[in-house]
Image 1 (cartoon, helix red, strand yellow):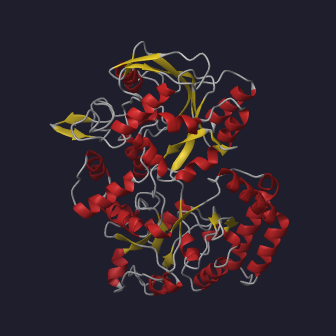
Image 2 (cartoon, one colour):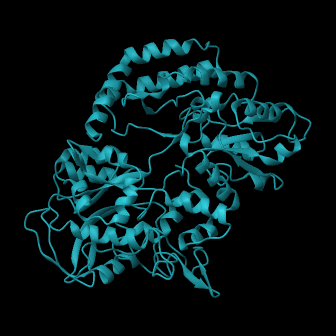
Image 3 (cartoon, helix red, strand yellow):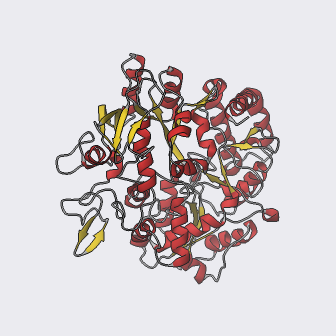
Length: 559
């Protein structure tokens, strides 16, 4: 995945205010008891601190961007010292690896298959998470969460209860979802505002309006060089037709989004690529290609190439998240200082309909070993983070970040979070957290802060102040477009991993879909080829996959 400075900041920055403190559960002092594991050791707390200290073991996949200063390591650093001094919790790594080329999953799989001792707390996602669930070595973390988590954490989790589904089996929630910021990947319509003004164009609110903009940008020489060398829309379909950088919104204007599983009126799940509306979306795309509105190379382009085509001054519109001006369009003003970008809500289809792609607000999960004697100690840590760092209070220890001299400092009498200005160099302390790699996140907090900045013009909270220093005006403005079209967002409702038939036929069906779509849109296949695709998809494994997906969905959905 490509991360530029700006994109990195989104993952990193929003994380930065996510936390350096650690919390308490029954915070009355005295003895904390529980029944999560045999041989339970009574823990004594004095003023919210375990005395004697309690050890929590883990294993680490250190993110590539994580850095250290003052000779510190992932095992011994400002955050681990803080946890011990403030909470009486010693965080100990059994092992750690720099997580490149899936090194973490590889080492964890080997340890699991060799039946090596597992640590108290394990982070995992995707296939690795499913292996942990199947191993039988981890306990019902959801039950512990219900018992020990503070209200702040519970409310954050309740923003999207389906986050639990991926880690649920036989009615037990084995992984606590690692919450992430919501809305970060919802697309908006990016346009060359200087071209709009030159050609006297107005905001395109419908697909019909948008086609007029596409035509003008393709045929009316918006760059004024006297040549016909621009297009209306730059987009890449190498990975998918309807991800955050694709045209999910065009298909969604007709009622479906390809490539994801959609919940139907009867409560079942159906695959979006074979639903009514996709055929109309393909026909519209085909007409745009025929008219020269889209580059013919789009089938082999990814989002990076499509973004660079915009920054090269060759295209007038692009769809992507609110931070797309930084990546993949980051070189636009460097290449052309006079270029101006603007964003709008995505155009609606017939009868004002609209749907667009969105991603789930979590990354992986936290698993708790069955042999952990005092799992409530982990919640003491997590609770403190959610209560004190996720949304830091004015005047608090964490108002400006995790640790002075590390991710913030006072320079020339002012607070700075610029890592290059911090004496000795700054580092992102949130990478050291035991709560996945991003610390405590409240899904709605990021978009809410940006929208408030757009509305009020000035930050009202420490969290908003942090983002006011980070986000350029175009991103703050774009966030309002994201928020105002939130009723149209649609996430993939299936998060259960590869079913048996997916494992056997999934690659073939995906290839069939991409090739069929490309032959229709960019080749000579008539739109009727889509009908044959549906028949083939269903008979060659699609119907079986649909049955398996719905069996999973029924098993994890609340009864």
